Length: 601
Image (cartoon, rainbow, N blue to C red; front, side):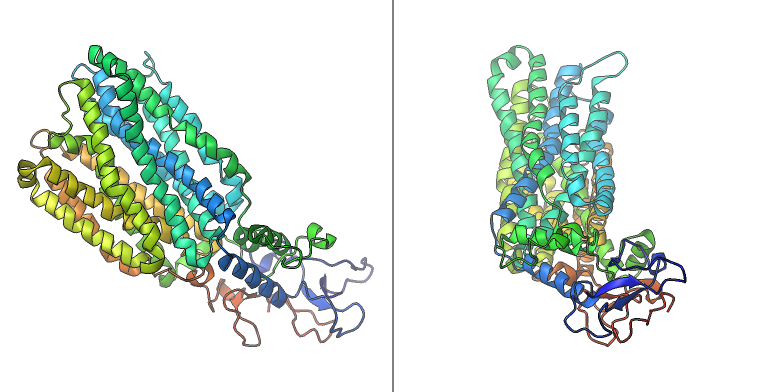
């Protein structure tokens, strides 16, 4: 049998007869011994087993990946989208419910009927800070520990923190706003973890020609979460109408139920997330277990015994971890080496700045709809408590139905035709134009018609969602290699949340300069500037439509480790297509069982 064995033992040492498979190592220097091909029966046995030949392992890897990329769209793909999508439904619900809750808190807990600006800011920005932490942290851990191991934990955090918000109370040691800030920070961590995990899991299970649509569909569930926030608020306000008109303090029931409802979809999804299998790409490229990856691919593709990449009755396959010495493991030094190259760094920079620019405007207006609507007298911040909150909820529903949901789903149905970059450029351009119109003609539009303002405002929502709000989520899940895909997505998403934090702080501090909501026109003009920045950096990002994840990683025919430790391609000059990283520990010539390859060579 052809196998890897250690070089000839020293005198007196025990003879090695069992195959020694490649262990998990970070670099060439970590190999404990040299390997060679050894033919136990003769020097050249053409009928020997080639399972451990690195060239054969690379071919098997390519075959497994091809099966994923070209699989028929089936129930497993639909289930993946649903399981990931329910999480994003919950994320959007929990994030944007606070937009309707803070006016209620002002009515209940403050004599003026309006929550102080600093407390309103603290409650809203806490979730964004937590989201930033979750995106960076879970992004790294998903590459380090595995997608499956981390998936579901973020929903558990959301469930606990959401219940904590709904049950918070006022006390001498801790005020209600302070308690909400703590719980909002925690819920943000869970929401942040959902971004890289759901994006990468969907991306790595998806077929090449449907990957963008699947990821966009997952993200589009945010629109339904946003809509449901308004619908639940309307139902609750209708149910408590008489009580609230008689006593505005009855709004306390409404906001607690409104927040607590966010637990229900998370509870539905958490079991399915905990039971989802590990992605075959992670098993292949990070766990480095070829046999397990082949079995997982066969399961996903629903192949029978004849179509499987492996034989299920092969007990060796079930017990032995067959590792490909070609695979490069992620490490800090390799991370720095990979992103030190401009062709890789510009992609990370472009996706991060584009997401940052988008979120400045998206969260600047998304978490402050009630202020914007009240500025055109659609939802007055003074007067009857019930009608004020009712109009705010109705206004949110109108904006979501006119702009957000159509924008999300137009992206889903066109992303594989138009491509990611065209949609992102169009969205940034149109958002820039619309923000300019709203900002520079604010007073004229407001004086002309509130309905016109709402339509234009909804159009900005449409082109943000049929545009960068969807594509900035999709692209980072495609353009990085498997060992850094979740980390890269987390960095890009975290950059976006930095933009959201800046927007919320800036909006809160600037909106009342010169009078109540007097600075809104200038803020809309600032949002237009950030849309222009996002448009410009989009030109740094490659189009990903129709390309495999391996093609997009910029590692084809590229030196993958400093010092020549790992190389793409074969020593004979043939092209490995980026899937075979040559190991200097392997003697492919197999001419002599005494020929060892010097690991220092």
